[in-house]
Amino acid sequence: MRDPYTHSPVVVNTDDGKGGRIVVRVEILDRVKHLFAEHGIRYWMDANILSIDNEPPFAFMNLNRQIDAKMVQDLLDGME
Image (cartoon, rainbow, N blue to C red):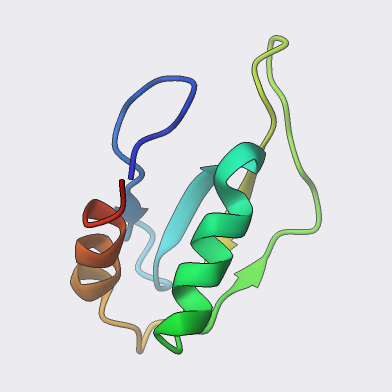
């Protein structure tokens, strides 16, 4: 899956050691939520949706430490 604004891949970031975090544009958020529901992937959302410098808004999806971040990344990479 690619970000519709930057055309960069949507990436599971695991740098903080607290599980995964994904930055998702609001435009594709429902698709990602549906994908996660289909595969039983649990997540929680940050309370705020942000927009910086008039760019399209985005949200943060958080995954717990027990989730297989590579599996989630593979699912995201498999989406058109």
